[in-house]
Length: 328
Image (cartoon, rainbow, N blue to C red; front, top):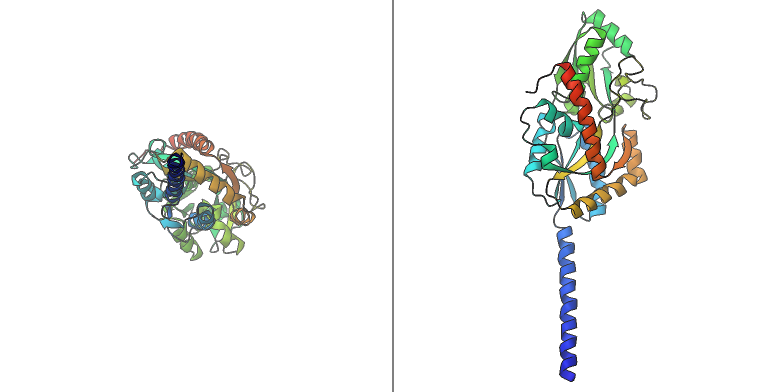
């Protein structure tokens, strides 16, 4: 009897130790190494700033360091290709807006990735508006005044900066030119930071980009936003009219920000990351900072972000087709 009890006790001990070992292994696996949050643009721009705000709080939620990795170039194409090649373990993520995920596959014949096949949405966390801003070197304070200034100073010609080639801002430059019978040429940059530097230096008279790219210099009076996309005015800039108000309709569908992982990442990992994003953007200080930057903060699950991207792609496929642009 005593030997039987000893054997039973030892079996119980071994089971307890085994369970403890499995739990420890699972915990170690869940927290194995830092998370790399890739951004497709250089430091100093709006997307980079947003990534750093989220990374700072995500590290607390995930229990591991979250490091922003700027893989700038080709409008986010380099970062997207890097995500495709990354291990599907949840340790490499891509924070992106619509350009890399939706627009590039519509305008580049061989971008090196297929978002629907190669990526899985983790979570969406905001929408935002693009807008037209003029530099301090022009006297214009409204879109009508900018149009009149270009007609007078440049005989109807001007160069307008955009943060990436074949982007929503570049298509918007073309539409504005057509609407107001101006010869506007888009000047693509490698991100919003160098574009903003040229605007502040009056090397270019205007630029089209996102509110997060423009809003700090707008508040400082160094540039002036004259119109924004969307169906309603933006809370961060209530005095700036929409293009629809000014007679340029068809651009009410706002772009989005989201986080993406390589295809094959376990669903449990996606769920854990998505829940962490939800908790981060619910923090009052994070929501306030993002709102101040011109974002409309709102959580989207993996499925909701996928649905949002599909609808946005349908809208812009039509706009790009109607513009006559051919994929290159």
